[in-house]
Image (cartoon, rainbow, N blue to C red):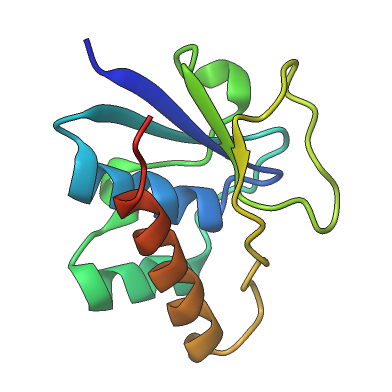
Length: 127
């Protein structure tokens, strides 16, 4: 049985969605990946959607949607994407905090750097 890994952001619209998509791309044979938030936006960040299509040919809008913590299966491992603004309370300690700044509203280069850091962190997962 594969361990379930959840990536948590407040709004589940950008970094956590990217992490879910890249987790599924690179490590789906070892883990099940989910993303969620403690509040949600109505849709995934459109810059993230566009750049993930451009870089990886992944259409996050076809396979993912914004969801709350209680809408995903119970995770074995819970990773915070970064709590610079407000850290969501999820009812337990985070297993890791990747301390990634939210690229929302910034230029493509900042998004691409964030996506690259997430890819590196995904590929280094060894739980």
